Amino acid sequence: MAQTKKLVIGNWKLYIDSPKEAKELYRASQNAARAARRTHVVVCPQTPLLGLFASNVSSSIRLGAQDAFWDVEPKHTGASSVYALRSLGVSHVILGHSEMRAAGETSHLVSLKTQTVIKHGLTAVICVGENERDMRGGYLTTLESQIRESLTGITRPKLASVVIAYEPVWAIGKSADQAMTPSTLHETTLFIKKILVSMYGRKPGTAVRVLYGGSVESKNAASLMQEGTVDGFLVGHASVDAKEFKAIIASVDKA
Ligand code: 13P
Image (cartoon, rainbow, N blue to C red):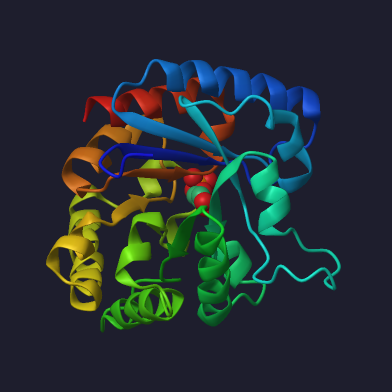
């Protein structure tokens, strides 16, 4: 996947449970993705549904997983290995989502998973984001430590397989008018790029794709894209609404 293309990832979370619904949504997302010229599209169904699409991954649409286990040894119950995911055609793995962090996932664990995912040829979509915006700027410290710790062990040559998804927790699962404003997103994207540049140097640091997630809908997609200076979106609830997702992809492609 060329690093310069824009990226829209649909995180279906547990919104879609049935194979029938999943197939319909996948087909609609694939059609929307085909119409995009400069944007890659990835959809991430829950793990038990991934196999439905194993033979239907194409250059227009890619398959992502919502998590992967950090170890490849067989003695782990209840996990999903990168081997299994890869054999189903998965190319991207969401890691460190705030809903996983809320359930106890640490940045240390995210870094172990990131290393495993990249080692086996997949792209790690590392989610970071503050719970709230405090007046004293503590959220910047949270953001910086999440980025630095989650990227522990990731060397410069591996960076092409990393995507950072900035998802402020307070903006997740709401509606477009409660999402982050484009100008605040712009400031935060610059902050994230600055951390990446300080870790890896100017060229490699600025080349890492940064996505925004948190109540992205067709209504705010264009302005967040243009003014927010992001490379695309990680979309939750609007990615399971075929019309909304299509409109978001079109906005990103046009930006
Ligand atoms: P919403 O788009 O529903 O706010 O979810 C964002 C998200 O968590 C994507 O990973």
